[in-house]
Image 1 (cartoon, one colour):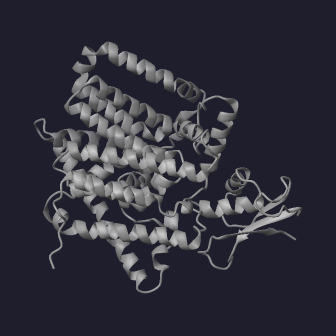
Image 2 (image 1 turned 180 degrees about the vertical axis):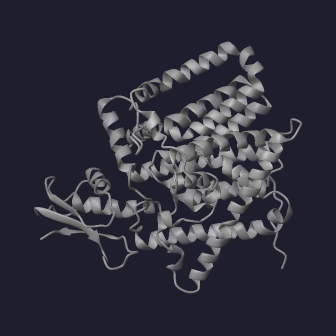
Image 3 (image 1 turned 45 degrees about the horizontal axis):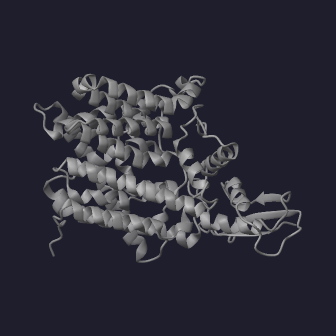
Length: 468
């Protein structure tokens, strides 16, 4: 039987992407709530209580505070309801809409790219996690997708509204996380190089726009002046240099043990172990396509003429170069969220690498099938086990919400013992503060939270009980 990708128009693939986006609402209680998530919500609640907008976010491991944009969003959402599932639903809508709009615009701008790649972000296990979590960094995904889309819309037909869109997206990207610096700098350089005459001609409008955005961002940048931002640069590291080229990992299930646990794809029993493992293996084709796309981008950037391919190649080369330099000097390795600000670069490289030949006609169906199987497998495993015991995913929000409801029946000054592995008790306690006791009030002096089956390393279901 001959298996080839259908040659449907972009509009059809967009509707498929939208439909797949709705699947992100399935098993809403299974989202992750670990690490910085609850700290961001605390900052948003504190800002609302004071009646002021938060001016900067959490401090990173390198001593630099992140931007406040994500917290601003949560400040608005928390005025509606103190309900984590409302926050997650809104986050899914924002991330999915921004991603679909940005990707659709890019594929509409560059007609030589295959249409089917538009569904890839909706099938990615990595982007599935990031669209559903409550972290600040993951907002970079929709913001930078819109940034790239707005940039090329302006580049090929400049207008003031398009310029404002690019400038606003760049500002919001930096106000989300300084990790966006390479894509913002590369985009700004490309725009000024190609349209400096337009900028000079519209100097008054451009100046007013930049002053407005500077006013918006000034409290954060003024705060950064007080910090040792230079301390983030540690010197070159070869591992970080190699890591910087592996961003298409986000369109695979490769190394997804980061979220789902070691050898998670082998936890289903026969015959599903083999099927899911094969799916993970097939998804790695995106990495190979991205390397091919990088080579094509550099070649197009150096070619003569003014074709759209050349402009795309210049932009990819510039942003990728800045990202590689930054990654190498700051020694970033292993964590997939380091790609969130530049994911569109790797997405376009993979799409370009998948253009023509056997890729679009023969390999693409197997790649998409493998990616879809990987996503369904990972989501199912999380759902069955109530999450996992991994530092980067942990017990699901639903399990924490349930535990919080039970803890609400205990006194405020109860001694709380969290007996889970690599856990974040603050998240459960936050869920407790948003609920009232719906059962029988308890008077116990000590209470503990443990796994239902401590001996099963994959079980993350919670049990709340008095502690002797």
